[in-house]
Structure formats: structure tokens, C-alpha cells
Length: 81
Image (cartoon, rainbow, N blue to C red; front, top):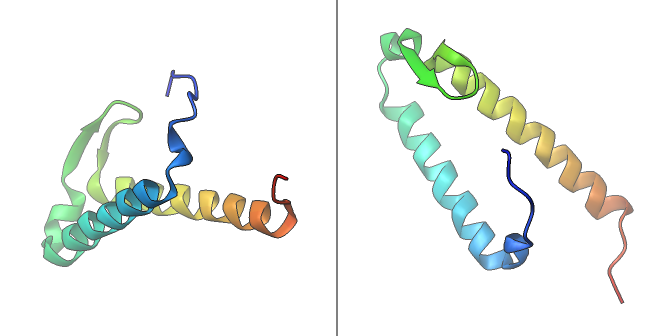
């Protein structure tokens, strides 16, 4: 946020590794958090103070939105020559 794209995302393998690590962290948090932990407040730079469950819901929605964008790009895009 607030930064220009400098083309840093061209290394596909590096991107895949980051995504894999991110999903691993998320999976670990979900599996190892007690039920009452989800209602605890978290301070965020974007939304202010929200519950952990609200933050999880936003992350899932945001990721699904980008997955749809990628899917459309792959379906309708063409390879550069």
C-alpha cells in the first residue's frame, strides 16, 4: 500500500514459496488457536482494532478475490510473444 510496482514479482518460484509459507502460517494459526482467541482484539494499520475472526474473514475474502482475478487472467489472457 502506498508503493509503486517495481516489477519485483517476476520470480514465479519465489512467489510460490511465499504463498506456500503464508498458507502454512495461516493453517497453523487456525489449527492451534483456542475458540475464545478468535474474539480477542487485534490492532491493525488498515482497520484499526478488530477481532481475530474479522481479520481472518477479510484475509480469506481478499485471497478469494485475487484468485478470481488470476483465474480470469489465465483464462482470457495470452502469452507474450
